[in-house]
Length: 168
Image (tube, rainbow, N blue to C red; front, side, top):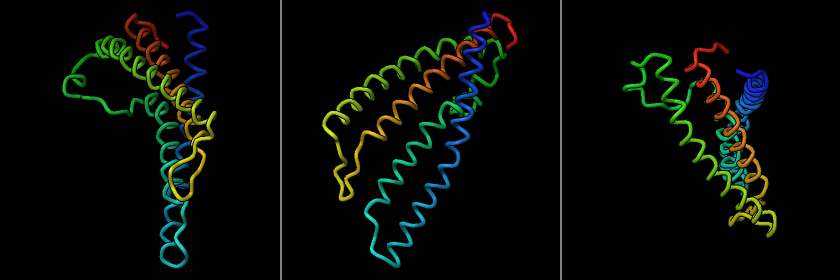
């Protein structure tokens, strides 16, 4: 495997790892938001922003953690047949199925970019009492999809190397 592809894979995996490890702490932010929401409903006036902020935090948590989860092989997979195959067979199947994932992610990114552009042009706001701008979360979602595309191609390159018998 050419050196530039190895460097690409290592760079993408390092980025996915750093972003994923940082995203793991968003669960604590989410807990704090929900705790404040419960406290404010019980003892103060209910906060208008907590539900949507919790949703936005959860979106950031899973969209930024997805590439790290894929890198570690901890994503959902049907193991009925997969677990009985050899590592080389698994890699061959993964090389084929990852093409479907890349297509899906490409369509998702296309729609996300259109939606983000719309949100930026018209200053789109949520239809709630809090009415936050939607562009920041949509930009974050597009960045998460780009990271997932990069991680997917890195995994595919590792699988191709594995099929060819090349150690990474």
